[in-house]
Length: 340
Image (cartoon, rainbow, N blue to C red; front, side, top):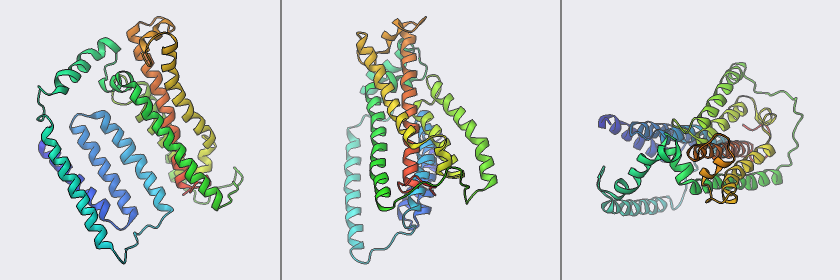
């Protein structure tokens, strides 16, 4: 690592973080926050955490920024100043941040020294994952083997959390928009008023490559940085790009909201179903090695690799669908009309 480069990125990240919480223009704050996420992506890459950087680039600098912009579109762009009690709120917030900061800094004294080879993580967990990942799973990417195999039960519930988040957005924004504004969707063939031939032509070129790359990220996440989460976000971003370039109804001709909800449920079902299948065959939950008895020409080790691919496909379906569902409801205020 080059400490000068790391220090520069960290300094710029702190500046962007302070600017994002101090700007009164919410649109500018959202853009600065996206720049902060991009800087963090560079920092993770410099530190060698490529999978984390991949996720930060796709989620933090990409889809999250779009969600913020869509939310700002339906709110006031400029923060309204408080006439009374503003200084008190600042003092309370400053005191809370200072107290938590002191607590976190004091807790670092209990951590092992940086790069200490005698720390518990370096003497127990890390050597096992580094030395046994390929012999036990046949997967070169240690991150994928940890998330989808060694820690697969936890990752399944993380996928369920994403699914529940989508349900929460639909239940709150969808019901709110339909109750306050009786919306009747206009005919599907109606022209879009804000068409831009340049943007739409670029969208038609970019979207197939985005989706092809997303499928590669999902299928090749065992051997290179990536996996179901990153690939699902990129797939969802391709549909969101169509919605931004045209409108929501054009995108929903290709992926309707009900179909997206079905895919999100199917993704969770695929993940948990593979684990249940392992139980029915007499092994532990998500113990993919037992699947070699039903997969032709497959050893127990390769069965674990194929099982991880199956759960990554389920994660990708859920993440893609939930990203689209969240954008549709946030951008249209729960009405699923033209959107922004």
